[in-house]
View (cartoon, one colour):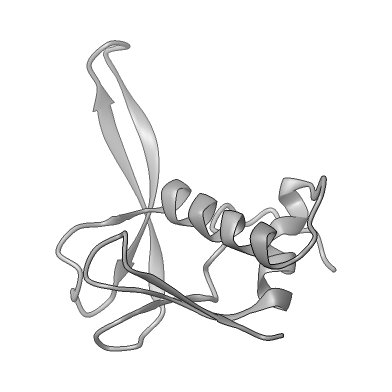
Length: 108
C-alpha cells in the first residue's frame, strides 16, 4: 500500500457509463457569496462530454469510500492511503447519467 498526495482518489477508477472512458480530474473555482472569495472546487468530467455537468469529486469519493467500508473491514485508514486501498479493492467505478447512478466492480 502506497501513500499518495493526489487529491483525486478515483483518478484511475472512475469511468463514464456511456463511453467507458475514464473521467478526468478538473479543478474549478466557485464564488463564495458569504466569504466574497473564490473557492477551489474538485470535479471529474468525461473527456467526450457525455456528462453535461461536472461530477463533484468530494461527493463521489465519499460515496465510494463508504461503499468500500461496507465491503471490507477498513478502520482508521489515513487519507494519504485511501487511493491505494480503493485501487486494491476496486477494478472500476462507473458513474451513470446522474451522480446517484454508481456501479462498483470489485476485485474480490
